[in-house]
Length: 140
Image 1 (cartoon, rainbow, N blue to C red):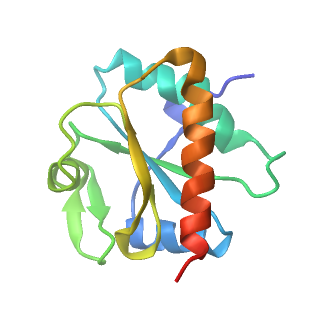
Image 2: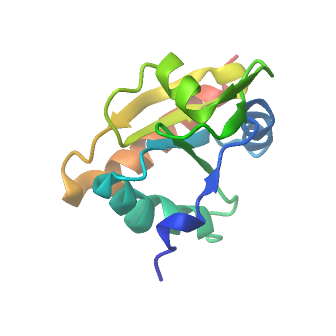
């Protein structure tokens, strides 16, 4: 059963969330979205929501959402206070959805997935990026 899009947790403290994800050998996965983006809702509902709830993977993936159009308070990777919108701007997010893969200190571990690409292959894009990010996370 697919998780409702609204059930993805909003990012609150990227430094702590990335560190927690890294302790399990996984990247922090962040979807940049907007409330009025129907493609964002599809990605969350069809792909990221089910992945966040999947306990079959052994280690649950840490997936967080950053609202490009929200002034929600956020602690960035350096521990500094900001907002979702300001952080998205700083990361040069222009179009959404964008799914990004981070390690501790905001280290980018794989190329972000921008847009929806080809829907039939989207799960494969995600799986490949997560695998690449997990490998890179283990490198010094």
